[in-house]
Image (cartoon, one colour):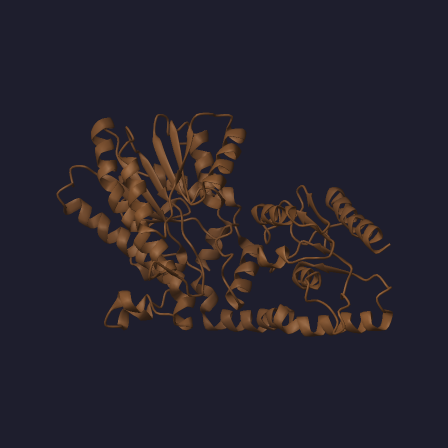
Length: 472
């Protein structure tokens, strides 16, 4: 339960000045990286480099930070693809042009439980471990040179996770660990992210110890790793099946706001020499063996908790998954259409888990055997379980969505992706964002909260108006 208690801890807003310093944040066009970069700009860093895969998204992040901090000419956007070794080496070579480099926050990472290769290497290990440490090792000489010029110790921080404690790491029993980490075994892939973060913790610890004894011991670098906590972000967007559903529930219950989680990255970037080689969490270092004191979500896998989770959640996830529910939903709407005929206009509304099947009803293949569409218009409130862009790019029937800007299941970046996808469609669409509203506000709201209650009524009117317009 230590991890649960940690999630409830208040993370202080960073106040350490980074005046005059040059800072790099990878994976900074969205999520924790974006908010950490925003903090560095707010804290007077002279140069903040957004290291991003997409320059276009990086420029959008730059504009967002400049608008909120009112500071111009601080941010630079550089391209970096963490799954391509040539890109990593080219980025590090470009850093040689910097007069100084004080802080590097390696935040970029991926989480998935399906197999994908990049240049012949399994992508989770490639991005989270090999690419991350390739970048670190290439930047160490530049960080040391900066220390010589400024007299200020440079820092390199890697984003880790408490799930490293859960790693079974079965691959270590194979003759070649690297070959085993490249194998496509489903039972291993569910553990792959945990293993990648365990390797991060172990490598930071061992490299930090070697740095103290090596030929550059007189040119110190503070090298640590940090667990930001379970946060609202898009990190888990590629997680499939039951693990994805469990993550959604955990995020709904205890996830930190993205900005709050980013504070841990900035805190580690300001930490002193006592943090060298350490695993940081809740803005403090965790000392001791990896398996003894590391806060984790391990409690959820203990037999009693696992039994309770399976008993309470698994049936819900199964019976409400699209695979299980879609045949019944489709059969129902087919029966209605066949009874009413093509002249009757039919609408469908779905909330939360009902959002995905409602959107599916608006797809081209949602038709009867003789080609009649199952529905003519749909509405969904705070949908969950949606795959982007697939679930939204296929719609051919009018769709209206009501969502709160504080929805912990569907982030605003996902909402914006939906808007961008629909922008190129001829089909009528509508996305109404309700300020301050959270997940579930359409159907479960405290009637004593006048503002939220009013928003639920407005969402109801939105649905009725949409159907009045498109159903006649």
